Structures are given as structure tokens and as C-alpha cells.
Image 1 (cartoon, one colour):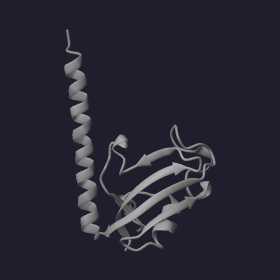
Image 2 (tube, rainbow, N blue to C red):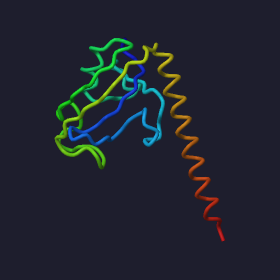
Image 3 (cartoon, rainbow, N blue to C red):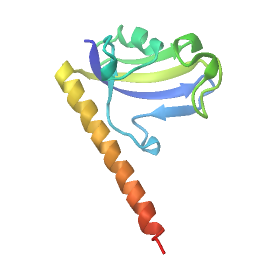
Length: 131
């Protein structure tokens, strides 16, 4: 299928975890919609995921070793992924989705994050009441 839900944990080759949707420490423990279609509105993934996921069936677990050229390249990403870093992902394909299911899940995720942002900014306002 061109749209799947997956669990993943990403680490550097040295073993430093930079992201996961199964580790509560990263704050987003829900399956990720992985878009293998050419429709960018359904989310973007690194090239190495397109290659790796396209070989996997629902129910499979795999370890993907992704060269920097198919990931974040010379610029790296964020604090944890350095320039030209090789990435290692443990992935599990949970199920396949129709486009309608994928769009609903993405929309629900966006609403959830907006609500989390709103609660966060409310808590800041409450912590610092205007004089």
C-alpha cells in the first residue's frame, strides 16, 4: 500500500535516539502516517524511508540503515542529527490506509497538536498574570 501507519524509533549509528513514536519521552506516542504516494499534502518523508517502506508488508518489522544522502545530507537536522549522519530506524508496519483514512488521521493529529499548543500558551498566561 502507498499509505501505511507505522511505529518507528530513529537513532544515529552511534546509538543516540533522536526520535520515536513509541517512547513517551518524545511526546507523540501514536502511529505515524507514512506517505509513499507522490501527494505532498499527506506528509513528507525522507527518501530512505520511501525506499525501505516500499519493500515492507503490513505486519513486518525491519531495521533500516539510511545513508545521509537519502536522509538529511550535509545540513543534518536539529540538535541530534549531524552533517552526513547515517541513520538507523527500527520500524514496524501496523496497517495500510486509504487516502480518506490517512487524511482524517493527519487532520486529527493537527487538531491535537493545536490543542496542546493552546493549553501550553494558556498555562504560560496563567503563570504570568498581567499586572
